[in-house]
Length: 107
Length: 114
Image 1 (spheres, rainbow over the protein chains, first blue to last red):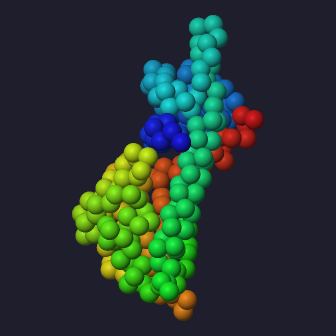
Image 2 (spheres, each protein chain N blue to C red):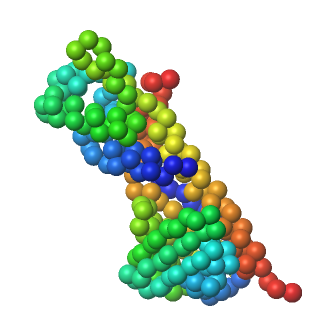
Image 3 (spheres, rainbow over the protein chains, first blue to last red):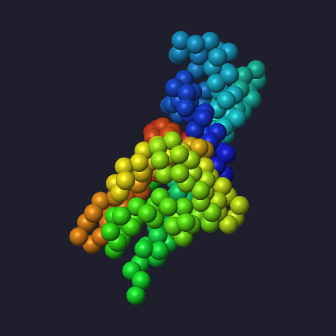
């Protein structure tokens, strides 16, 4: 488990504007900051900044093509999040087994 | 999104409550070293043998019924106790604040990429 990377994913997704960008990229398959800004009431610079934050969290990856960078989603971090959830569940299974043992009526 | 576990223990609620709130009993099943002040606003420190340490703040305490801990590193755990004929039903509900967002995106974003 890498709790730090999960935290970064959640921090990146904690912003409604960034979630909107992830949805848009998901719908389009890939997109540049210019394309994304065209459909939103924000500047290209603002979109580029949000894309950089998403890229830092590993949620999107940029591929440079000519003068522009095209961004695509990288699903792995959400996979990490799912793995984290499985880990939390397993942790509780083990602890609750230990609690059951602890509470077992003594003969 | 959250992780939920439900277990029935053959013990009265008072005993399960003690196992959840008394540090020396928590050390028997939850972590290797436990400090806990089980009052609203009280703090908890849990240390495991592998060096992991987690800190929490007690948010709600309703003796023998409900205990809510806020993990300092994110999320919360709600313990709910209920007396049943077999003993005590304990529900553990651990929530991470942004799970629902991640899962919503999971549904939205996962398929088109594959």
